[in-house]
Length: 75
Image 1 (cartoon, rainbow, N blue to C red):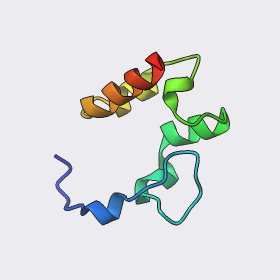
Image 2 (cartoon, helix red, strand yellow):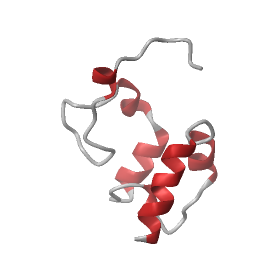
Image 3 (cartoon, rainbow, N blue to C red):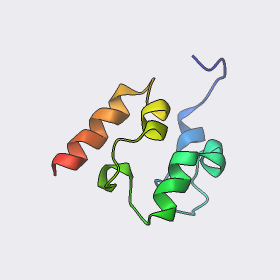
Image 4 (cartoon, rainbow, N blue to C red):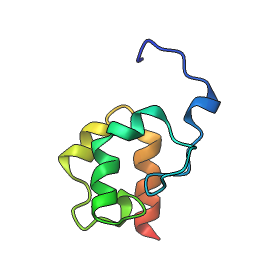
């Protein structure tokens, strides 16, 4: 879909709130990650503004990620 080859090791990540070396390259410019960090949230599932336009656009091609966030919201 993005016309690039990405190996599993390239996306080994500890999640949005972390600043570890294990971060996907895009994380440094991701607006969704920046928003979650500014709000001091573990992820968007815990946001009072869930689901916002920024998240909806970011998850457009990732229904599995949306399903995971939905399950986290349900507890």
